[in-house]
Amino acid sequence: MSANLHTLISSSVQGLGLELVEIERSAGGLLRVTIDHPWEAGQEELLINVEDCERVTRQLQYVLEVEGVDYKRLEVASPGIDRPLLNERDFERFMGEMVDLTLKAPIGSDATSNGLGAVNANRKKFRGALGKSESGGWQIVLENEAAKPLKPGAKVSKKKLAQPALVMGFVLDELSVARLAPIVDFKGRRKGAPADGNELN
Image (tube, rainbow, N blue to C red):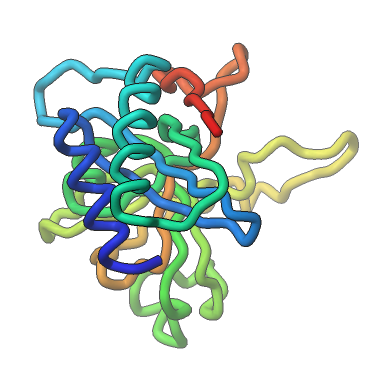
């Protein structure tokens, strides 16, 4: 993905009062653009609808043709339930949500000294509730493995059930990937999840 293409698409989306979340290009010529409404603390959440996707599609079709960008199909959509978290503002926006994090490097052999003695030192992927740490950085409260649904007849020791919640602190530079955890309610979608996007050839 060239920096010029990212800048071109981002500027076009922003010109329509929206923001670019993600761009993906597939080997088959698909150009997928994910958009969202800008977020400000204290303001009501606005969800992307089909009309928003259609407006961006029309604008991008024109701009990409003028700039001679090679693609076979353009798809403009709203963020899914596994929305990527790309910057400090995204982390502020989704505080309290369950997130999936992948570290650039394993937590290392000093895991015990970091309060993560129950976590494999070679582990890079974590899921937990996002929050602010007392030091002013970020943290997640890791999922309690013992609290997950068990297969019929399976047992968990009282010792494991009694383990305290584990908290992992981090800074954004340590992350390779951060996304909302794809957790849905009984209706089959995340509470407040946006509508499906729009695809035009």
